[in-house]
Image (cartoon, rainbow, N blue to C red; front, side):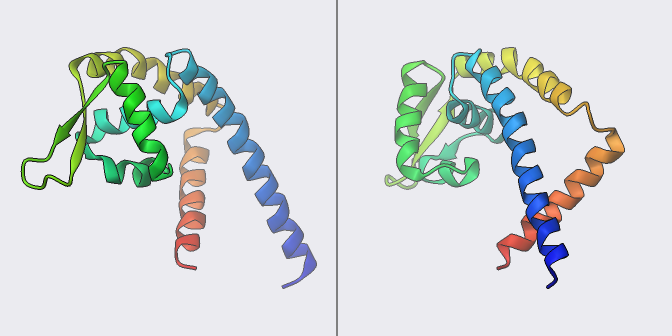
Length: 146
């Protein structure tokens, strides 16, 4: 491996990190205007779009340590946005289930949320977005095999 290639890889890493941080900071500020933190919003979005989820599996789906899930679920339950439901087939499993209030909340905020994210990404053309998606997927998939 030559030093020019290494330097290019380092530059890509820095540019990718800065771009992620810039977009993520904007999205996190937006989420806070809804009265939730980013993790709470991620759980609500998961439950809304994917349905009931076992508590033990939520962390892996939203990239959060499993110890934090109980705290986040407690907070969302206190806000009336989700409830815990025991699995009828296996008493060891508890599901997080979005409430009617939680559904109404997501249906109220998600269209604006999606529109804002689209605005954050508007610097790229549709073709550039497709190219970025393909390249970043390729990069991400290559890391899971190492």
